[in-house]
Image (cartoon, rainbow, N blue to C red; front, side, top):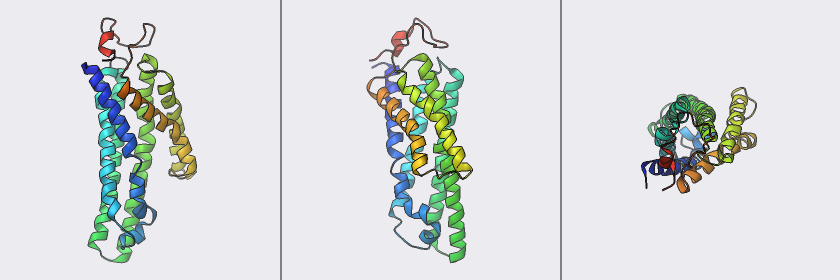
Length: 239
């Protein structure tokens, strides 16, 4: 297995990991996010919060891993977009980590106790902060990194074009949904928000599976490959 195949395999596994880890966290946080004031005063179990925090940390780390793994390959075809992919993935992870810190702070307040009114007000504030990080991280930043990565893959034809097309379509839909949430149109976690996020979810899962099991294809001669060097196509061939 050559170096490029190892990188695409790692990127694919990281993408699948990001997708899988992103699913259970909100469910584990449901108590604190739905009723922060009541939860911080001791209502309901707190067993899932620490697990939710760990899972979100893994989501952020695997997200960065996807970008670092493919960067050495895609920088040949779109250097600026490849760098933008790494930067936006890192920003998304930073937003996720900030949200985890907010929830864990509420967890600490619950453990330590104190004046009920102060605890309730503080918990509400930290959960509001968590909500904003969720909007700007997995919401807005995810659309940016999809545009950066998907457009490189679509022009270079390293994967079948229908896969990055999902990302190109899904990114503006996610921006529209996030903007609407920002101005109170609908909740990010809602049926409308879920519907608008489906193309991005399909893009991330499909590109992750393809890279894991197929790797990148050799770009055709007529592909828009930027800095592509004709003598190196074998480096992108399957193992």
